[in-house]
Length: 301
Image (cartoon, rainbow, N blue to C red; front, side, top):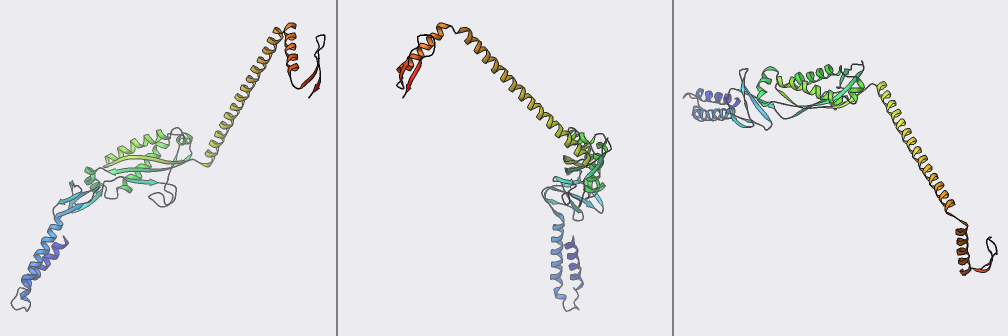
C-alpha cells in the first residue's frame, strides 16, 4: 500500500511538471513512467501476501474481519485489506513457583484451598493451540492477546474450583491423576468455546504446607520401621523352625542308631578297626585284649 501511495505522488508530480514554461518539463514523461511502475509494483505487492508455515492469515477491511482464512504460502488478496497472522502451532503456558521458570516473572504458581482448609501450591503447564478455522472469531472477539485473556484466567479458575473437593494429602498422592483428568475435561470445553484446542494439561508439582509434609514423612518412616520389624520377626521364625527341624533330625538319628546297634554289631566293628590298625605302617605293636576292652597300641612311628 505504501508503494501505491508513493507511485501516485510521483505520477501527480509528472503531470504537474508537464508545462512548456518550465525548464524541466522534458522530465515529465519519465517521471510519469516511474510513477506508474511504482504503483504497479505496489499494487502487486499489496495483492500478494505470504503466510508462514504454522500460521494462518485473517483479513480485515476497514475494521471488518473476514470469516475466511489464508493458509500458508502465497495468497492473492484485496490490496486494501490488512492481514493479521495468527500462530496455530502448539503453545505452552507455564505457571510455576520457581522464579523465571514460568511465563510470568516471579512466583506465578496457583495457590488453592483444599477441602480440609489447607493451602496447596500447584505448578502446571498448559499445552494448547488455536483452531485454524476459529482464528477470525478469536481476532474479532478476543484479539491477539488470547493467552492472558483466556488461557491464564480459565486455567487458574478451574483449578481453584476443583481443588476444594479434595483433601490436601489425597491431592498430593492417590487423587492427583483424578484431579488432573477432571480439570482437563472442564478446561477443554472452555477453550473449545473460545476457539482454542487443549492438547495436554501437565501438573508438574504440588507443594503441601510444611506441617503436612512432616506428618507424611513421619507416617512413612513409621510404616517402614513396621515393615522392617515384620521382616526381622519373619526371619527369626524361619531360623527357629530350621533349628527345630535340625534338632528333630538329630534326635531321630540317635534313636535309630541306638535301636539298630547290637553287641554282635559292636564286636564286628571292633574287629574291623583292629585289622586296620594291624595293617597300618605306623602301628608297631598291638596288644590284643582277651576280653571286650579296647586293645592297647604301643609304638607310633
